[in-house]
Image (cartoon, rainbow, N blue to C red):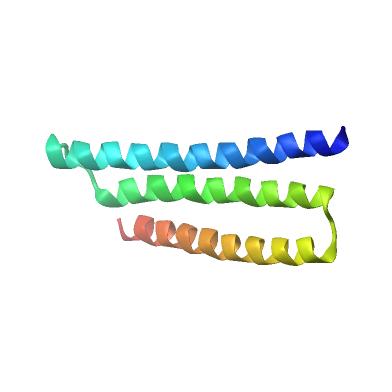
Length: 107
């Protein structure tokens, strides 16, 4: 019972993170096409910032899913794997966030 609830929470966080990435990607594609095909004036940096923010938020949901998943199996191997995954996702998220702030500061 308890593990089923945790599995549903993990699934929800994972699906929501994936939806955010897909939504951000589709939105970025639409905005690029709008600029290229319909010659709307837009800054590619604003498109990148918007997409990057969706990816960073999605990574937070994936990290949350991994943290909740370890509640079910808190053995040493799972904790080590979680630490590596969280470290990688944190570095990627930090790098994307820093890039977005750099782009904003140049505008």
